[in-house]
Image 1 (cartoon, rainbow, N blue to C red):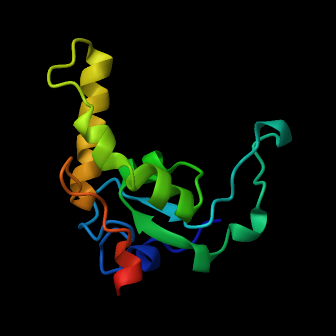
Image 2 (cartoon, rainbow, N blue to C red):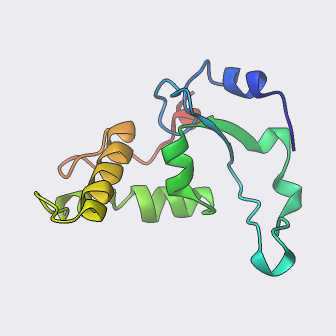
Length: 130
């Protein structure tokens, strides 16, 4: 699907549909309901009906990567709902480059949503608050 990127960008006035933060220059178009591509079908969408303009929103690239092919409730509950717990378990001084990158990644996701070890995700995405 090649929709007008500008119209998708403007859906939320240049803000991420999930976090409400101003979109970074490398923002991406995200399917709220995933299309889930299958390796068994040569990369074809498992849910092609979800590939439509009403199901796409502008999001931060990192958030799109973190959500991957989860549906919205899985993302809300399992990934963001427990992120504050995972943040509290991150090592203070990771020893490996991989560990440092992982910590940086998790902290950036948390920053987008205002999540800290003491403050969990409020359960609402930006587009749901409008």
